[in-house]
Length: 626
Image (cartoon, rainbow, N blue to C red; front, side):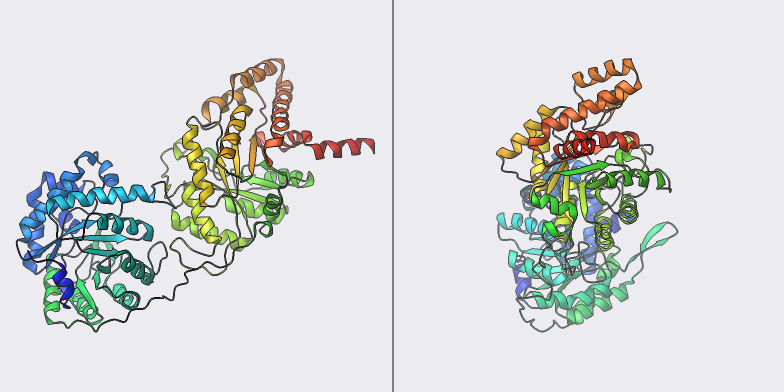
């Protein structure tokens, strides 16, 4: 078999194959199956599809291994067969390709977000890509194809992994949208430039859009790299016809656009979703009649801004940010949004907080997966109607990455500045356990997203114009059952851009002090605001101790509440406030603020906890003397 680099050097256009998944589905393989597993269970079916593309004129066939990485295979319990699945994919393709058609080892994204938007590290991603590629090498591929990538950092790890294994050529392809940007907002030209720098031999696009939109982006790629270009569009945009997803672009239409792409300088053409051997046959005919485009100039700089705009200093973002920056003690009370559409009662409580001089109102985002008024709408009402700053708990449960991006941009425009970024409670905790949870990213990824917006950049690294000016906080649980895991996640949040943290309700001060000591030894200097929850009954204490994840109520505190409750309701309330005041007094030297929860919306009870603060005690004494 000749070296694929001969095709790279000959200056002529060449044909890749079309969709594997589309063909498998058309042969009766349902989408709930692992298509990669078919290499082991139904190899003849896979081989027959490869042969149909070879007969149609494909010069390169891609292995049936797009999703054969450890992360995706583990969803089917197949991770132990990773090497066998990949090696067999290459062997099957080779048996169909013969001695005159090249076999490309197909590798797709991992299917999880990697840092900075997900918990998977770049080194872990590198290892996942490397082990998949090793299996493909065992089977005897001639080159690799990285396809359908939208995350620049993820494809960088894939290229790095392939380069570590040798010198086989690499075709690296990204997903674009109609506007020529990836789903994460990165311009195609930025991708092309970086892929060339990292060592891809061919740079291109595949999937997501039809040939028309892909043709529009060819010039962007051509202006940013001197590497040969590839283009494998879908057979048009998917449409729903009688409940089925259909791709409507005809073979003739695909061939016409393939010819146009070749005239623009694309060297490798083929197809993705919806493309069949009939499409590839027409495309191959167009290639035979086409003339390659002229040599493209190398452009070292793109039009896309590469640097962020100046950031807004912390002290200038909000009153909350000013006190954080100055090292002043912060006071806040948590009040949950209303269950219905009437915010009157909630706003009455918030007015009491403003009159008492509280710095901010913490507004939870669907705590314990309860159905309540939206957190952004609630926060805007508080800020506009009462004039006190909200601290917005914003969680990942209900929104994907793009939805969060939209919300945050809207929050900036509305003047909402103070954020507490959290992952969120799963729906199974609430009254709608069958509701779908998104969790597209977690709190670490969300912190990275918001911090990037504060530098004037979207998730793809493209400029958004004026930078946002959020004050970025995160949650942390000093009483976590697995403290080491909690600490690791906290360090990552700080690294992502967290500027303060609020703890889960603290009932055991030794846990808080242990946590503070650990982060001090690690050099973590962001302000810590302690969560304090005044208990109102023994039942309340037992509920928190046994049914609220992440909250630890020691036995001695529960026992105190049991004894007080035995004496009566008012005695229990007084004991709960006394416990909260005691914890706040003892914690004061080690913290920069306190968040007090208003139990069952009872704001006056929350305000009583603050009476032990020195400035409030002094104020009370002056009022008494007057």
